[in-house]
Image (cartoon, rainbow over all chains, first blue to last red; front, top):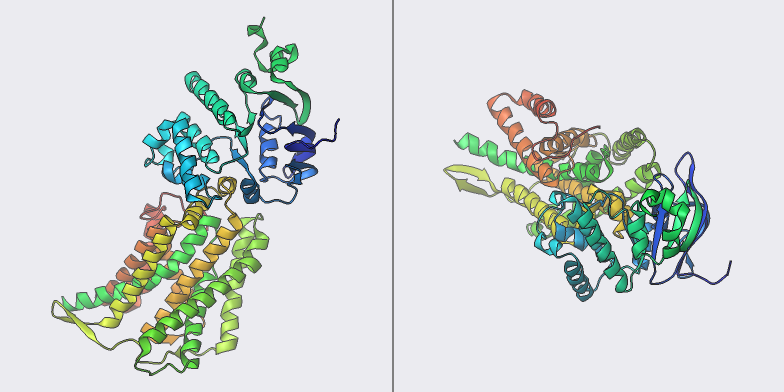
Length: 244
Length: 301
């Protein structure tokens, strides 16, 4: 193991809820500009890992380092200011607010009006639907549109690292493809992405590297194409039968 | 007709006061799902602080009282708001995350503390605001001669409510308040400091309540250390009537309750006014538990 600092680093991280630990000493390195796929079965702790990075849950042991700084005591809202934004599981749009109000809230940490305008233009270019539905209440959007809004809202904070939790969940295959295409485009703009996904194949296809969690332990880490070819991974997460 | 106009104008003045107090209950509930039982006593504190400021400035009896009264109002609002901030820090924040019942008990304790502190400080007997601060003039509407003071009261509460509405809907911090009310954890992910938003709520709510306290002193003249209980209960009823957690609901509920109370005391009997007000509460809870404008369920108290 080298001692070089990575852009974002989870070091022997243990996180849990009241009764039990969910993550048992996991480590993970993310370099600037990468797309990292974080894979694993239900309950493996993927969402918990993202929640710990965004500061909603505090580590029991170990640490999280971003650009060399420990996030140990950093509250969530500061973590957003530092440049890590989390589009949470289940989209979590503010249903009783309009699409535009949701997007504006995404830019809550920004002061510069011009920057906000630029981001809004970018987000609306990425997801033209959001502009069309600007005045509509977010709760009335379809699942796919809500997912776009959730991602778009996260982008409004001009993140350096974007945490995406199950962006494809419950979406029709065509929409899934569109969302993954957008994730590529977001990454092309220089945003580092950590992608938690059930849809391991789609995730690995756009990712640079992948990590595999199993009941709270990191069991595999490798380049995405290696993981795609790995028979164990194929059997467990890629529906092994399909791949010959 | 004249009688009705009298009661309506009186009801609007009273209703505006209820609405201002109700806003404090409803905003705290909307964010923390907590009934701040000490809120009525913050209202009382506003009345006492207003009186202290009025008399210590030696303003009583001055003709040019308009500007001075405005100053007293603003200072009282600010002081009560600071007490509200401290209340949240001391009585509610340490209990955040623990059982909701703990916070309710803490709220009741804070209420008793405030009442007794005010009784010790200002005495158990009622105090009287210096007379003649509000203009004596009347205005004529449809042949009825109605005191201008009532309309001033109502206009001032409407002004404060408009300011609040503007703040909540048009400013960045207002958007943060709305976001936290909907989903605090997701609000955190937007970079919103939820603790600051809660502090802000405990600043704005008591400020409005404190304003209502001074208004009661100016309008009704007499204040007592325990009047926060009665007014608080009525304002709480108003908040539920409109839909607790809902800001326009508290405004509507307050004004409606004021009107219901004055009209029932005129046409039924003054002895029945509280009974009617609380009968309205019961009817609302039975037939429309979400209140008139509320989408949310007023689940537990």
